[in-house]
Image (cartoon, rainbow, N blue to C red; front, side, top):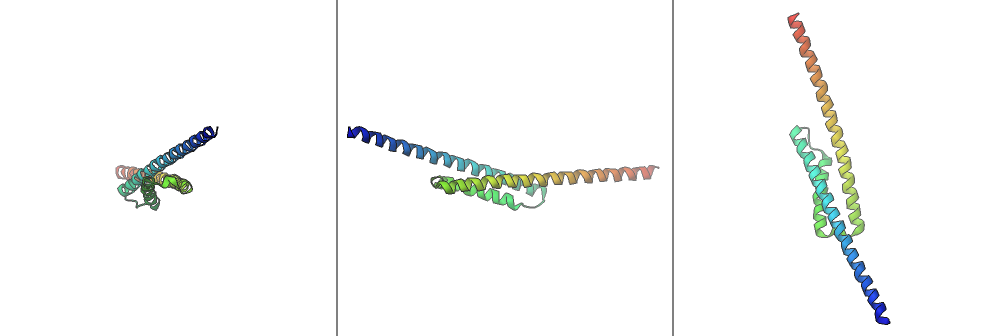
Amino acid sequence: MRSGGYAKTANHRRTRKRAAAIGVTAMGVLLFLLGLLAAVSGGLKLRSRVRSLVGISPLAVSETAIGVLTILGAGAGLARVRPLAWAVVAVAFLLIVVSSIVHVRKALRRRLKRESSEAERLASHLQAADDGHG
């Protein structure tokens, strides 16, 4: 009778260990994917900034850095420390969202400014053409 109870307890321990290992693996995959998303997103934002010669955004730099550090942390076993892993996930996700919102706002502002300057140049060109032919 005693051995049956022991077997159940041992099976229960093995099941809990497997569940914990799966949880650590899932957290590691989540950290890796979120880090990859942050690194790629920040890198693309930096690339667009360099191409447009507007200047480098500190948010994009920090997003790229957090992404790379999160990937390294996932490989180093950061997933085993649950509270810290969840904090990293929250910070990385928040940084991705805030950086993306700021990037879109700046891109829209640049686009509107370019469209208004094109309209002004067209109007002045047409005015000059009318004055020259009239």
